[in-house]
Length: 323
Picture 1 (cartoon, rainbow, N blue to C red):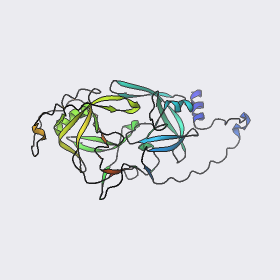
Picture 2: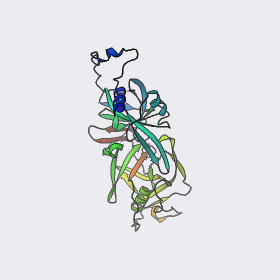
Picture 3: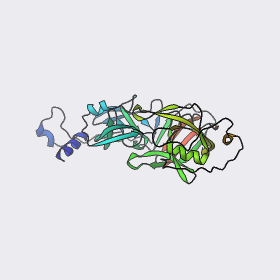
Picture 4: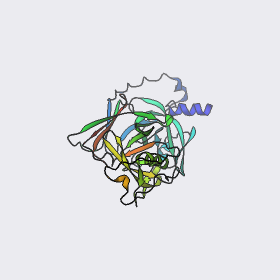
């Protein structure tokens, strides 16, 4: 306990500065400089990198709309900061487990230093910066990702912002499918919409879905973990406002078996125009109901704004077409 308190004091900047005599440790501290007021909105584009100070060291973090839980720094950064692990942390991607650790550090995102939990593994969290951070950690009223040049005319679509996951907070919006609600997270960092096998079973059951022939692929997850996928198409689109969501990359070897999906065959009646079918299939398993919406789905959109104060996610998009 004494060691842990000492470690926390060091992390929060209470350690002696190099060359400071121990007798001066109790000297009155100089008043900290007043932090400059932050703007209401942070606008990100390109690599979406922001400056941050951790334990007094200037670093850079990549902002990801997909990131959840505490910020994750690269292992060499944790070593350079002399972070003392306080507990273990892990990430599971089906059969692949990435072990990690976590500790408390003084993190300044521009609004002054605060004690925050940081995590790290033996794999880098970002190849562009010193680590990864989610939108939910940022001290701004609004965070906007610029995705592409604006194409006039555009329409703004507003969705209720939903926080889910408890300590592993995710930001998204919910869309009702059947008697349940899908949690949809916008992830312009990846190309395709992505779901797990149990969620594919659920969606296929309610929206008449099937796997497209010769559609095997690979999804790259956090820490560069690669997982096999197949592409599923649904006959009855899920409407995200006026955006028709019809295709999903399904992680087929991670959590259960997507046996309820089936295959799309030539002249499949489910995909004939104006053909209405009543499904008799019953969903099985426990889907996580998490859907990642990739940049291909919102390629016609120029910006996405997380209005954390108003509790909205807003998309600015040109006219849409079903994908």
